[in-house]
Every structure is written in C-alpha cells, then in structure tokens.
Length: 193
View 1 (cartoon, rainbow, N blue to C red):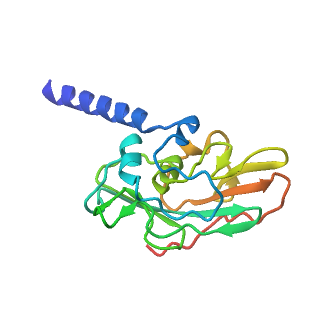
View 2 (cartoon, rainbow, N blue to C red):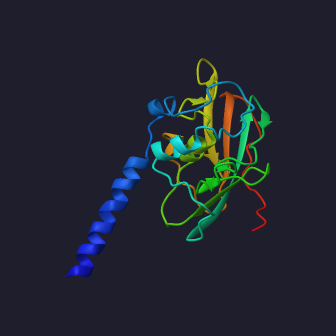
View 3 (cartoon, rainbow, N blue to C red):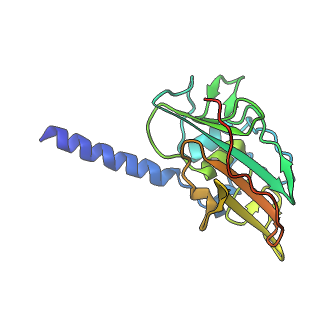
C-alpha cells in the first residue's frame, strides 16, 4: 500500500535526520565559531549558518508554528548567575532564525519549529556558539573538586546533558563549581505564555 510505504520512508528520513543532528561532546569544539573562553558569552552569529548546517537544523525565514514550546535556562558559575543573552539563534543581517532561539535576557528558550521533532540542550548551546559537553561549559571544565552538573526542575540529570530533550516549561539549570557546594538550584519558573 502506497500510504504505508510513504509513512515508512518518512519515519526513516526523520530517524536519519535525528541521528545526523546529534553532535557528540568531542565534536562541539570543532563547530565554526564555538566559544571556549570564559563567560559572559554573546550570541555568535557570524558562523551561525555553518553551525546550523553542521547540526542539521534549518535557517528559517520566520519562526516556525508547528512546534512552539518554551524552557527556562539558568547558568550558575561558582554560585553566580551568568546571563543568557537576547538574540541567540537570530541573524538579523542575513534575515534568518533558528528553531532554537532567545528573544530577550529572561533566559527563556523558544523552540519554534516548522516541524514537530525533538530538540536538545546540546543543540541550543551549539546554536548559541558556546562549548557544552558532559564536562565543559565554555572555559569551565570539570576537574578536581569542580564539576559541571545539570538539573531539570530542581533534580539532577545523569548522562550526557547534551542529549537532554527540551520539553514544555522545563526549568533547566547548568551549574559549574565545587560538587560539594550547596548552591540554590532553581526548580520552577513562572512562564508568561
């Protein structure tokens, strides 16, 4: 039956695209324009299109409306907040926008895609242009007593945080510093959508 064949081919194409979109931690340092220095980090737009191509995300001419969800991102370095800037994933000169982007400095991530699919925290940092792996955030890499930890809704996640799938209204905290430090980890955010 033709419908079944089309459905199977569509599923295979989506699976191939999802596999191609995964950039492992070792490859993130090789993405064009990726920042490995200290915070704060401005949005990197000069190489944004190349990074989008490398991670198999489209450059949209307008925000997608098939999938529209939001998450909130907090970054804490040694207990101090680091701003998540406006304009991540947006190149106003070349007039395109990534499905993963920010509009303001609130820390709200906008997932606005023209297709329904999963997007990950690792992809967001790739779009931003900041190195993010299971052990490093920019210049801050786990060693000695210092660790890189990721929390969702106040609970620690295990495994590679790059693979964290972005879901509606998650409160995500990326925390670097002494693993024994008792930092206040955000567990909720008041979304206004």
